[in-house]
Image (cartoon, rainbow, N blue to C red):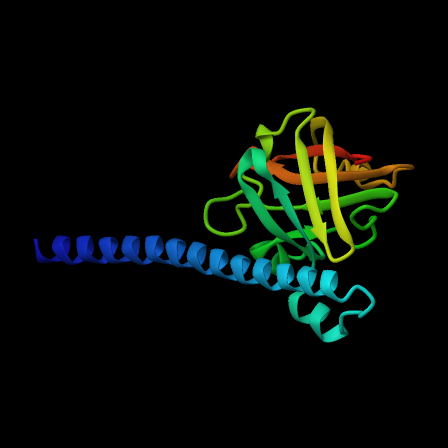
Length: 193
């Protein structure tokens, strides 16, 4: 009987530790994301006040942020980090390095996670429909994209990253949530206004 009680206590302790870790990881991720967003918004504000002054390499390195993605339909406001490595996607969404930058001609491609601990920024991306609006704020300006396509592809279908003649945006995430056998692709085009 004592062994059963001890075993039960050990299992309960392990469960508490696992749940605590998930909650703490989520809180840490939210805190870091809020810090990155505030820091980059201050950079945008400084750039607007002093447009001829270039930001230092230290600022760019410190934040690693190239913009802020806003999708009001799904209550999303998240920083866009440079690169799609796991450390970037833990606290932001990531820009594919060899694709266009926001507002430029070409395919501006970003990726984000869908999970329930950290990096859950694209959990509701599947709710977007044709005609929905995506905003990208940078130190160079604010760009509005309009969704024109939504599809699911296999992970090896990397042609979704190909360059385009016009200014477009591609959002990429795993689907279904937790299983991640495919990729959800949202395509949007830069709005002229």
